[in-house]
Image (cartoon, rainbow, N blue to C red; front, side):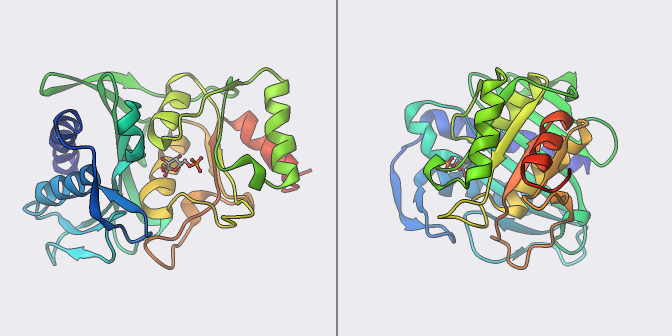
Length: 283
Ligand code: P6P
């Protein structure tokens, strides 16, 4: 597994360089979700594929930017599902973006997610890594080296509220719940980039990130394999919760298609328990 993490560190340095030096324009292609691809999306995907292709413990790759499964090594142990540059449309307004990695052993289901990692490309390059054991580990790049900053834990209750999705398409009880958090004094922290938005809540002690089912996207927008479940593992290992709109753990999801999405809620225990009440999941 350490080989995978070391490879992610080298990927992070290469993608950060690409962000800072390469063309921000659109390519002439679309990804498997039909979204226009930036040249940076394609370049970041290429960097990741090239980095893992000679790592024998990596059986296959599944990219948010492509259809299907890329088989690398028949006898490999891990399948890595990744979003190469999540929130890439924010690069041209100079906001932070990120790469997300889910490391699966066996079938691509939540229970087989054995580790996850994400990289934040911001004023500094930051890396978060977790397995099923222990707290997430926070690293910061200094030149070509990643220095360990420490373990990350969520407090029981936080102060930040990151409400995703188009508000006019929220259901009434979701809007009431979100507005009530603000009425309690929660601070709005939402950039439209999942990685920096969830990173901020983790590092600032807690709160809630929500991307609900909406009238236009009943199954939510965020992808189970590449986005939702890797962060669900991070939040659970940090002492928080990560659930669906039905109250089940996101790590119990079993995607039918690699690009399946799910409504998702990540946060400290207090906020998640309050959401369960607002959603009628618990009394
Ligand atoms: P909305 C970026 O496009 C992304 O996939 C995530 O990084 C982010 O959390 C979400 O979409 C933002 O979506 O609908 O709130 O703009």
